[in-house]
Image 1 (tube, rainbow, N blue to C red):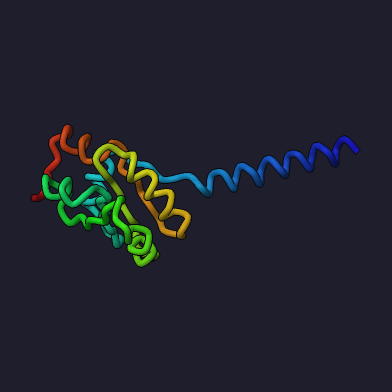
Image 2: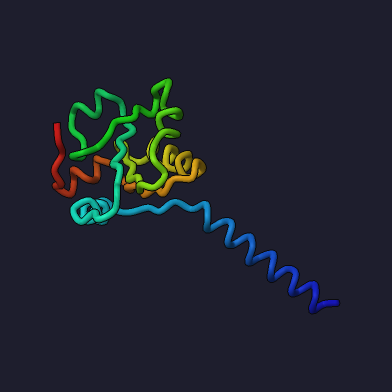
Length: 129
């Protein structure tokens, strides 16, 4: 009886661990994202979720703007192709981490750039205007 109970709890723990890890976001430093973007062999969508005003002050080259506070934000996210990897960022990481979780729930492959464009700039990486 004890062996069956122990086996049950071990299997339950393994299932819960697998479910928890499936929902985690892939997070990368700005240095890792910089290297990824420079050597991207796969289809990558670079997504900026700041406001249009923030975007105009400087953004990563090739980034597409989807305003996190826009009325059509979730609709636009749902139209992104699921076969591409989405690299997402904002100013410091708050909006982009929330948007990344939403994209993950929609079934997208998402990489969150930790620290946002502010840390990107501190590293001296280029921004486009």
